[in-house]
Length: 258
Image 1 (tube, helix red, strand yellow):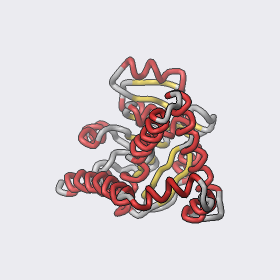
Image 2 (cartoon, one colour; image 1 turned 180 degrees about the horizontal axis):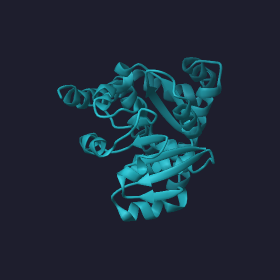
Image 3 (tube, helix red, strand yellow; image 1 turned 135 degrees about the vertical axis):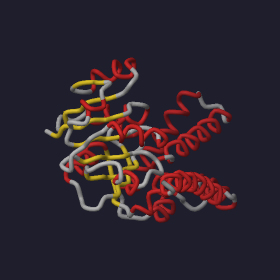
Image 4 (cartoon, one colour; image 1 turned 120 degrees about the vertical axis):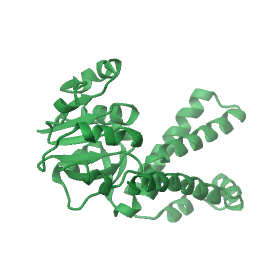
C-alpha cells in the first residue's frame, strides 16, 4: 500500500483522486483549500486536509496546481529525498522543481480520463520510479518521454481530450442535422471514438491500414474519407496541436528565466 497525496484538487487533481479510488493499492490523501471540494472527494480517499504539511508525509506527493501557483506550494513543502514529488503542472520543467525540493522529481502530463482508468499520460524522469509507474498503470496507459518532448505531449494527450470532444460534438451535430435524435447521436459518436481508439491500441495494423480496412470500394466510408482527404483538416489539426505545444513552451520559458 503506497501513501499518495494529491495537492490541488481541481478538475485534474480530482480526476486523479477518483481514479486511484478504483483500486485498493494506494492510500490517498486529498489536499485543497476549498472545503466544498474536499467534502465532494471524501468518499474517494482515505482522508482530506487543508494542511499542505499533513499531505507532505506521503510516499508520493502529486502537485496538481496551476503553474502560477506551484512555487508557493513548493515553498510550503519540506520533502525529504526519500519522497517522490510528481508535478502535473503544464510547462513547469523539472529543473525548476528540483531547485525547490530535495525530493525525487517526476514530471507527468496526464489527462482527465484518469477518473475512469483510461488516462493517457507522458512521464519524464531521471530513473524509473516503481511507485509512480504502479500509480500510472492503475490510471491508464503511459509512455516515457524526454523532458524536451513534454510540450508536445502536453498538447497531444493533455489538451487532446478537448480536441476529441470537439470532433465528437461535430459528428453529433452532423448526425442531428440528418435527423438523428441528439442523445442517440451523442452515444453513437462517443462510442465510435471509444471503440476506434481501443482498436488502434490493440490492433497489429497501423492506423492507415485500419482506415483501408473500413473503406470498402464503392461504399459509404470511402465517400466520406474522400471529403476528408480533399480538405485541410490534417493541417488544421496540426495547427491546433502546434498552438497548444507553443503555449506550453512559453510557460516553460517563464520558469527557465528564474
